[in-house]
Image (cartoon, rainbow, N blue to C red):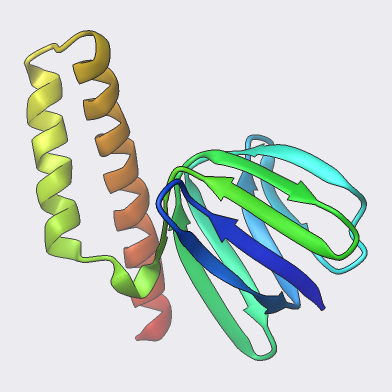
Length: 136
């Protein structure tokens, strides 16, 4: 077993013993099993998969970092949301708002906020669509 902690600035999003974790790193998806070599890597926005027994758990995460030791994985990310908590209507609305904001050619902080919201919305919609298609 592998101890997993997923931490955001607001909360501890997940903590439990798991069999495997797959994270979206800057170099592609990385699978982490117990006794993995030590690793510290940058994470990108995307889907994090947790395998615990026969259960697969999926989270939409923001960018951040992962630290791996032989017995523990710590994921520090800007956000982490279980895919079942994603609301398609709210995500589509946020994506539209971000797109509209970007049409006004913002600069500085307004530009970064609109770009981040658009990226987050796209990631969330992609994860939600992929998970819905797997269920049906």
